[in-house]
Length: 318
Image (cartoon, rainbow, N blue to C red; front, side, top):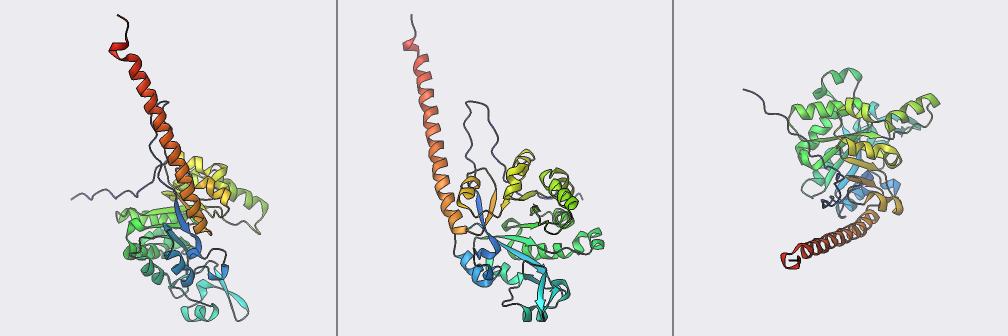
């Protein structure tokens, strides 16, 4: 008995250029993701329950959060991979939950966030901040990245989340697992990692691999392109359009930049520390966009009427 082909992940397609005179199809609105649980400029609230509850009260489409893996296998919300314990920085990968809890002001477990999002209409933007040991990638299903993705799929379903990571091997592992299970899961390779403290040659190598993103996106099998807004403007947006992959842009907070990225068709999803501003800008930009579309439709209608009047049988010379 042959196995059915794996389901393809839904891929929002950017509007294509049409021949002159053809009507444009309306572009879908750009979706909004509340960065780090919607903490905004209150950095002490990043990835906390207070921020999460606030985001759940907004009309955002996604809630983004950072997931780290502790040494005992617990997934928690935390951005950095180290935390101060007893006056020294310790890798989270070396801590158990009890030690971690004693070092931070609040513990928010990954499974708690997934449960809080379930049934709210908000989708999860799961940003994985860890990677498995190199040997684990020989069996994608055994990796910690797949364990995190599997848990999200179990709690939310494959259509209500996107998984992102800076690591090519992590993307490939989750994509291979999802495809093997026939899951239409969106998995994005994030471009724009920090290069602070790296040798100049390494900085150049990394940035080149991000601007010329095709090889990494192809080899990682990412089905979402995720890019810092500067990289997106530097050519990654055009690349995503050419290969028909949805574009996720991070982290856009400035109103002028939001007006650029919120134009329908510019991106699929925008992550922001200013979700309320982004929602307001989106509403204003969409109104202008649809007003212009209505004006174009009216001009087409009038031109069609004039052409019909010129060719009406009663107007022809006998």
